[in-house]
Length: 118
Image: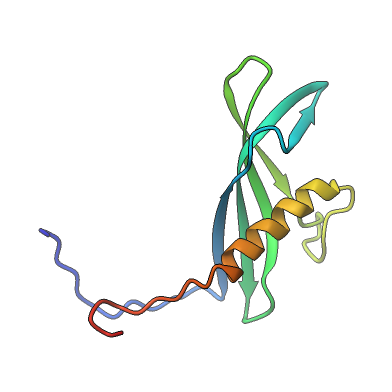
């Protein structure tokens, strides 16, 4: 490896964010916009935790196939406009995607130790 790295990295943000991507089985989630249906096949959920508070989902970015066969991205904001709670009117299927992402991130048992320190 030709890269040299020095220092002791420190996180400066009080707002920690984690993005969790999940692949969706084709045909299991349809998003509709302006009378057009889009078959979602990937979701990227952004979770955040401010000042060590519980994790909350901020938004979901979907990748889907449109009626013309081309891929499109759609983002759903999950916070209300005042950012103090969940947005009303978000379909239950989208909250299910958030729950799947949270479950996959927490339940697959990801642990990490630097090489040679196990």
